[in-house]
Amino acid sequence: MSDHTLNQIEETLAHQEQQISDLSDMVIRQGHEIDALQKQLVKILDKINAGSQNNEDNEKLLSASEHAALNKPPHY
Image (cartoon, rainbow, N blue to C red; front, side, top):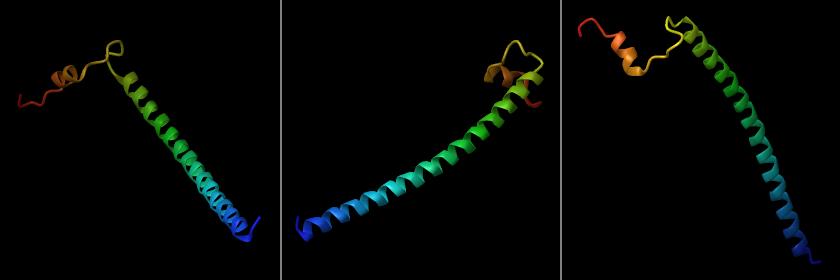
């Protein structure tokens, strides 16, 4: 094996090691982002559930147009 071929192999290996390191860092960052998004989702779902429990008509959820009709501003 010539020195030139050995240098090419070492260079390729170094690039691959850097790519693996970069991908590992990216996966760790994405894991943290997913954790944060899951926490936000839980909070949002808790707010939605709390809002639906406070709704006077728990049995029937109103459509957007029904909600707007019931909550018309006084000038209509």
